Image (cartoon, rainbow, N blue to C red; front, top):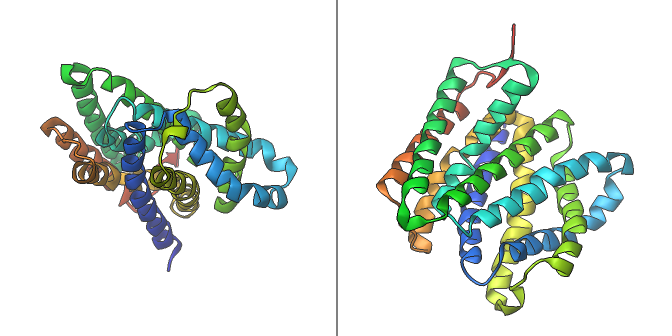
Length: 296
């Protein structure tokens, strides 16, 4: 298999993981768990697996870079998403997180390094932005969903964190396996003491089935498998295309949430999902470099 094919295959795996993540996290956030509980399960379970390997395999000189990755791809991303699920439905997470990641990735590349945008990237970015604005307008002006716009802003901020994480892993050429080990280990060391000492908890009220579901999905599938595969796709197909390859997450999340946890999809939200997905898919399927240096 070519590197491009392997990279796109990894991105497809991330689509499946993150679609399920949106549904499972929304289910947990509207049930027994607080956003802080979900963060504790994510970082606690993943660190129990990763910490021994991190201490053995990652040189201490690389720890500051892994701390930066944990700040954006671990703590920042996860806590913002979990908080957002307390205000907004899974369909909105699919749009604002997974539609926002390619948006922020391209914007950061263009603004931070003096890059120009090829025509197909600009079209993809405009389509995705139009879909985000459409969903955001519905959230802001729909009185029956008071506070949904807060969740949308949190999701969009989480997308920015993940975009920075993806760009840093590629820029520093950190191997996907080590990136995952660092995120899990450092996030747990920073977060768990604060959680145990100060943050509100409801985890003691949860049953074992819920604990197992959230612990396995958050700590293993989302924190380790999906993060590792996304980092791998970044190395193989580039940051822009890896981000845009998440095109199907909004649609899959919305359909899955509708079937599994009875979240209705409005006509406006459905149109926004289609537009965001079309823009991201258009950008992901292009063979040209997504963002090229100015003057080349």
